[in-house]
Length: 265
Image (cartoon, rainbow, N blue to C red):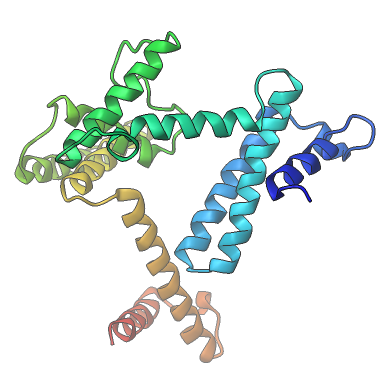
């Protein structure tokens, strides 16, 4: 009996078979699969946030299928196959953790991270990749919030960072003032407001980082909390036999406060 991974590879190869495969799978390319990979990744995250472990098992399988799909297409083009992918990550993880898989000793997280970065630099040099900037390695397709965090962390590593919280907070307040200054013009310019709002959000990401908080995680929790409370407002409104649009803002705000107080009990 074949190993489950080998069976999955066989299934994928069959789906891509030019004559006997699935028409949809056959016509896919690296580019067309990317949106599905992103979607499956977020579904994994959602299952974790919901503590839905049975669903997480399923979503991890869907995410693994994305890796198998890319590997099959690469195999068809003579680039690499799934075994190469596994061998590559095995070698990299072993080499990047000499304190686990060899006799190297590190006394702090800082030393571990320094070794990790040094190994990454060696890898890039070996394949002929040279960075003109420390920011060159940040993927351009990252979501903006995650990208801002990575930019700031990279700059902080070379000393381009405040070493106390005061200036960080001052910068947030400065950016708020600049947003409002632009917004309160007689004829506000949307492009300038957009730029100032971007600066404000970048500054807030910096504040989160200085408070040892992941801004993506923090915003995600805020989103989920808002959704839960707003659903409570909807329930209260429906119990009174009216739709949300039939209430004024003060009435909806009263519902919101009641739901908020209930969630604290």
